[in-house]
Length: 185
Image (cartoon, rainbow, N blue to C red; front, top):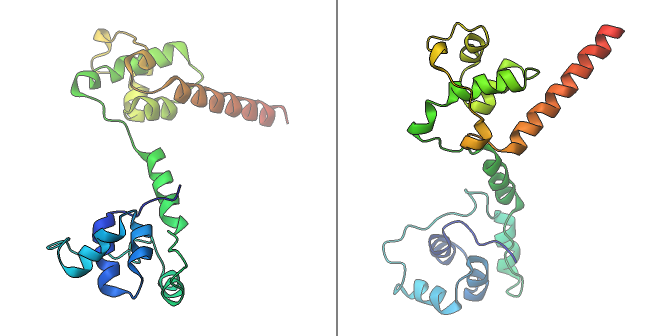
């Protein structure tokens, strides 16, 4: 199934006002009914909606619109660039950590230091969401609140997933093997 454009009604408004595409082509692209597009063109629907330019947003190209304008049987095809950007953004999204769990971050760092000592400070900092300097002070037992820290499993607390931990451990294993290989040579 093909993907609908971002803000389909506003996109439809822009396409009706700025192109010579048929109502069917616009309706198919915007995943709307042809009658809705006809109503937009008549001014019955979409009053006050500012048209959204799909070319600027990268969902369509001028060439794609021109090709479909010349052949009324040719459907508009959404650009793949827009879809790839969305896939990349999903991976980069950080999970929100409630205030009640933020105080557990140093406890989680201590647990990782004790149970997975092969992880670098930077890896622990990235997993838990604190600074490398904080991890270093916890490891050196010079953290301002070290005496009150209780090691807690961060996966059980939901700070990150077991998969994230396994990936970091595999990365640490690869780093250790690389260092041993360089040491032996």
